[in-house]
Structure formats: C-alpha cells, structure tokens
Amino acid sequence: MRAKNRLSLGLSCLAALLLLVAAGLYWRWYLRPLPISAAVDVEVLPGEPLREAAAKFQQQGLLPSAHEFVLYARLLHATGAVRAGEYRVEPGTSLAGLLVLMRSGKVGVHALTLAEG
Image (cartoon, rainbow, N blue to C red; front, side, top):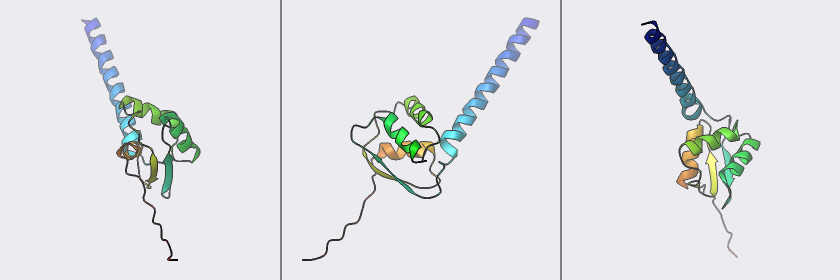
C-alpha cells in the first residue's frame, strides 16, 4: 500500500513540475514582450538559415537568446517556413509573434517619391 502511495505522490509531483515548466514556457514565449522599447526593422536574407537570422537578431538586441528562438521554431516545425524580407517588429511583440510575423511574409513597405524632371 505504501508503494502505491509513493508512486502516486511521485507522479503527482512530476505532473506539477511539468505543469510549472509548461506555464513558464508559455509565459516566456507567448506573453513576455521582446526587450525593445521602439520599433526595430529586421531583415531576413533569401536563403539565410533561421539560426543565422536569430543570431543577427540577438546582436541587434531584439532577442535575449538566439538558441531559444531556434528551439521554439523547431518545436513548431517552422524552421523552413521563415520568409525572406524586411520586417518591422513593434514593442510588445512576443517571441511567438516574431515567428508568426516572419512566417507571414508581411514585409515592410517603403515610400519612394521621385521628383519630376
């Protein structure tokens, strides 16, 4: 009887630990905004691997950890779905929001005015 109680207690502790880890990752990836205070333009070059793009974003101060971003994209099987282009990342964007933006292909548009003559 004691063995069953220990097993039940152990499984309950394991389930609670897994729940805490899942809640922490949810907060870190979906709710916590990226550490930027103003909009940042980022560029993903054609053929650039996600790992290189993430390292570039980390150097610009957009990502706290390039490895975490790559891990998150791998867990969603989205490493090959990132499209090339120039993206504007607004303050308040989460890690998940950045990946969605990069997969959407909604690149920034620049206005160009040409003078006559």
